[in-house]
Image (cartoon, rainbow, N blue to C red; front, side, top):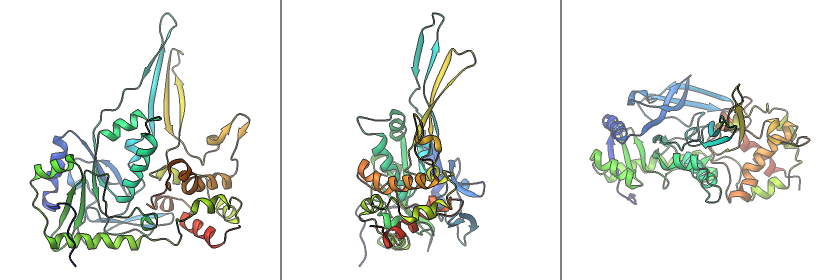
Length: 376
């Protein structure tokens, strides 16, 4: 039975992709998207379509990442890389305020101005949209709203793309974050490679619809919709890992002394790579710096990690002195404590923590082992 799309869909031919860049530029957005840097597909500023990783793909295993050429000219034929979009919404360093002592020795404080940069994120995947939604919830709560995050989010245009293949480390199907993308986007594309190279496009907001209208895109045919649907539908089954998300909270709280924690501690380097590449981790700290004359001071917010010794420092010393305790804290918070705080799991199944762990620790294997042999 042929699938009819729930909303109008359009076709953008690959040869017209530069037109999308021009429209976004005219709207005064800085385009951020995938490009090849240091032998990885990273997110960076884009000026032309030729900067996209056209015809390239990545191969990921635990602790391994490499690029190779595809046998076609796919624009988005890769999985997620080491960066996430939080680098632009919640940057690694953010000045919060500065103060200066005047001639009368009075201190004057000045908050950092709200950012006005307008970003267009190109190539946002389904798992990444779920991650952005989680950080929206964390940073835009009315009582504890982060004004810098809120302004950046307000000024961001989301140009998403549906995955048509899953990577070896993806487990979005297990986490319920797999495509198709259905919400929280302005524009979403599905790449179709044959019989002609094109993109099936759907608008998810007035801003996205305005781009469709400016480009004067033709409506997609039933066959093109069906082709795109079939390509996306196959991803979910590819990205299933052997653990269940049901009742993970109680499982982890009941197994704080499981032998699995000792086993992973023997391998973990406590390097914090997993938290830095994770699209949902949000821990930060503040540091104050002053000039040599001691008349001016600045307070900066910067990323931090629960894997660092100083993170759990309180008066009298560090609470989590062992690698075991720090890894257990991270994983337990991600899949248990997060539910207590925010009502959901804190993982979107992107697999970055597996790929970019130097020793290839696989969190899905740890969770499966706990489920297979709980201590209680």
